[in-house]
Every structure is written in C-alpha cells, then in structure tokens.
Image (tube, rainbow, N blue to C red; front, top):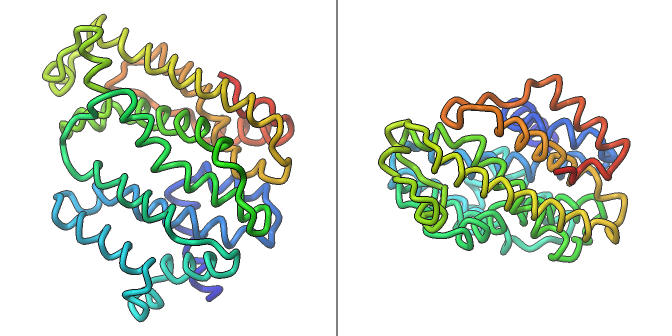
Length: 281
C-alpha cells in the first residue's frame, strides 16, 4: 500500500504543486491521506484534458463512481490512486458520498454548455471543492470533518480563482464558465470571447466575478475565526486566491500568466506563519 501512497505523492507534487507544498505543513502521520485525496481530485479534475471527448470522459467518471461504490474491487486495488483513496476512506471512517457528488459536478467539464448563472457557478464551486477541503480538514482532525459552513465560502472563492485563471484556456476550446447572466448584465457576447477578443464589457464582467470571489474570501475569514487551528494546512492553498485576483487586474484575461512558483511557495509559507493571510483579498 505504501507504494500506492508514494504514487499519489508524486502525482500531487507534479500536477498540484500548491496542495503538495501545503500538505508538507501537515503532521507526517496524515500526509498519506492528504496526498491520496488530492491525487483523486487531480484524476477527476483533468478528465476533460485527458479524455478530450465527452463519451470517454463519461466512461472514466463512471469507473470512479463504481470504484468508490465497491463495484470494481479488483480493478480499484490495482489502481494506485483508487487503492490509496479507498484505504484512506476506511482508515478515517469517511463515506464516499461527497466524492461521488464531486464526480457528478465535474460532468459539466466534459461538455461545452455555458455556465447559466452566478448561482450555478457558485454551486459548481461548492460541489467540486468543498468535499476536498472538508475531507482534508477531517483527515487533519483524525476523522472529524469540520462544519460544512466553514468550507462553503472557501470552496467558492478557490473555484472562482481557478476559473478566472484558466479563462483563456477555456475560451480557446469554447468552454464558458463565465455565467451567462453575468455576461448579459454587462452586454458581453460569448462569440467574442471564443474569438479571443477582449473588450470593456468583458473586463467589467470579469471584474465583477473577481469581486464575488473576494466577498467569499471575506465571508470565509469570518467563519475561520472559530475553526480549529489543526486544519490550517488544508486551507493554505486559498492564500493564493487573493494575490491571483490582484494579478488578474493587470493582465490580458486571454493570456494570463500564473504567479511564479517561487512566489506561490513564499505565499504559502507566509500564510502558514500567519493564518490571517489565507483569506486576504
């Protein structure tokens, strides 16, 4: 089983460097569980990138549903991420239901249907990110997940930061996570987005979405005041959202360059020393 966990660690180190570094601030006894959870999240979140077409993506997601449901025991045992995740769920006494909801929410990624509304985007953020934050926090508390309220705003802020940072990539393949009601309110045309054309109305729509992300960061800061300190490593990646939002204000949305690796690492280290920085907008 340790080989499976080592595979997860290597995958997270390569594909989600921020959460890899954040997990290093966790007690060593819980890192295997964190890396198994984060490796699973990578496997699901990148299905569109790997599968390219909806049907292969649907098949991959269904395999994960069945693996978590115990229907593919032998196949799951041979899959290092699935085996490590199932071992983690058993070790900490977690049920798989939240992860099944995460899988279902990522079905949206497989198709080119536009995000209909801000409410739908916020719900997408909760369903795709809250299980990860909540279960990571539960691992750090030896099997006791935090109250749902704590992870809701964190999840939306983190998801919005991710969507905004990948705006150009999504537009290039005609995916639209920017909500239609937001675009309509500002008079922005999806066709100009797919053509890679920036405009004042598009900038205004993106600015409003950044403001919504900041509102969720502020709300999360209020709820964090009552959170146990030992869940801090699970929340550290959120410390990158505020700096990303500020960087976006000065960038071409179609050619956004993320923060350099050294700066991301420094921001995580600084937030670990001063948790108030996690939610700085």
